[in-house]
Amino acid sequence: MENGKHNKDWSSYEETIEKFIQVIAKNMSLYGITTSVGRLYGALYFADEPMTLDDMRDALEMSKTSMSTGVRSLSEMKMVEPAFKKGVRKDLYKSEEDWYKSFTSLFGNRWRHHTETNIEEAEEAIIELRELAENTSDEELKEKIESDIDRLVYAKNYYKWLMKFIKVVETGEIFKYVPKETDKS
Image 1: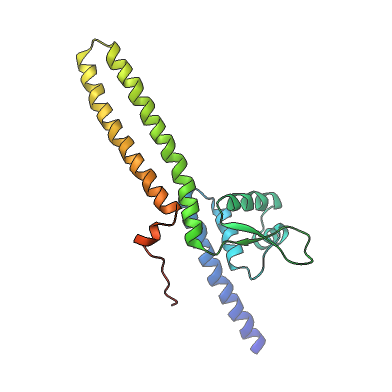
Image 2: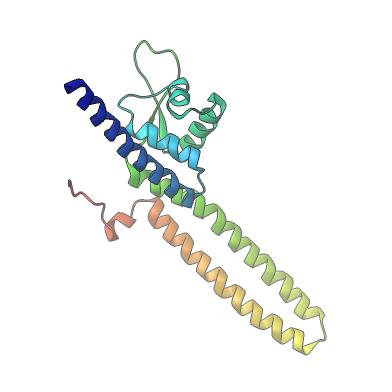
């Protein structure tokens, strides 16, 4: 009887953890991470020991190639790191357990690239519109261009501000303004 209860308890435990891993996976899609890679991170996060690609494949029933690609993606985002265990020759990986560090790295990498691109695109559009305004005799078009240049300058200023915000996040300075939670319950 005790063994049956124990199995039921473990089954309930595994269901609860699996539900939370699904939540992690779903939320990571907000950052452009696929659900399967999110599930991989969740599995590594709750693993008691570092895992090999074979361990991950068995746990998630995914191909070794998918695991390798997922681990590489997570490593680039500083969410997974290599681990070492004496006597184990295969590559081992463990999750980065500091979610604050992972978030600041992931947020910075994703947002910096897009924001830099947006600044460049706004600058190019402004240059092209100014050139067009200089070369057209259509007064209505000139007015429209000036109005749109004002909008583009506003957008560029927003993106410059966003770059400052990204820097505050990346450097960890954000935690001066929004402290990390330390509640143990």
